[in-house]
Image: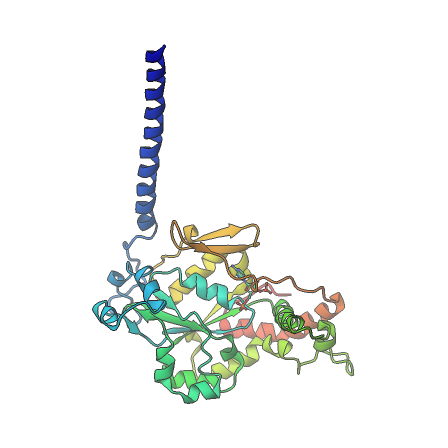
Length: 345
Ligand code: A3P
């Protein structure tokens, strides 16, 4: 009897031991496969011999962990010097469009090991007071990075602010500019929803969207309403084109970034001359949020804040139709200039 119990106990211990060893082997293999998911090689043909925009791959395997500590301000000057870390001016800027998905784009690009994001909107070029502080002030606002990484910042107000193109041109005339757009009427409603939420937070009342978007005297679209004006993408882009050639812009489809982010991000990687490193592994759909969230590695993942993905108020369909008709010719022009066509109504 005692012997039988001992045999059973041994069998149980053996099974448990095998399970533990199995799990350990799985974890080791999983961590190893993370590296394999983002291989350093092969380097595809887009990385030409010694183009100015190239990013040497040897720098790419460094990134999180240590950089995170530096960002939190836990690094000493000596550590910064030892690791050769620098605060670099951005090589690419997400200039807009507000409510287009600018935060999602920045966070998703930051999944790339060669990209380091400026977390805050810096508002250097659109804010006269900040601009007067000079370019060194701006550089000091940038995160630490390895010399071969690129820094990206986003300030959506840049797209619509008159003075910004010239100011950015003066800093770097060959900078890469990212514009993320959504169907213009949806974007305008999203813009309104953000303002409405701000008013409600302060216990203030606010007009209905219909009242702001349509001029009560003419019954036409109210072009003085900022949310409408911002959605006339071509008008703003034309101002930028006085300084930068169209090749320096990349248009991101913000509606597609919501439903199918990876192909949009791969187009951006290509535009920035980065090796393709963001994979499906880095993006997973979170049904509770109703959006894609980010997976950096086996332990660290995150979704965007709740202020991204608000429920829009219902808007009168005749107003939506009127707005869509209004935006239509501007959209056509936008497609023509950018060479990117959308299925906007
Ligand atoms: P809504 O709040 O109208 O849904 P921005 O960052 O420029 O302010 O844009 C906000 C928009 O980003 C949100 O608009 C949301 O639809 C969109 N978005 C795109 N991808 C997202 C994601 N993965 N998580 C949350 N919001 C996302």
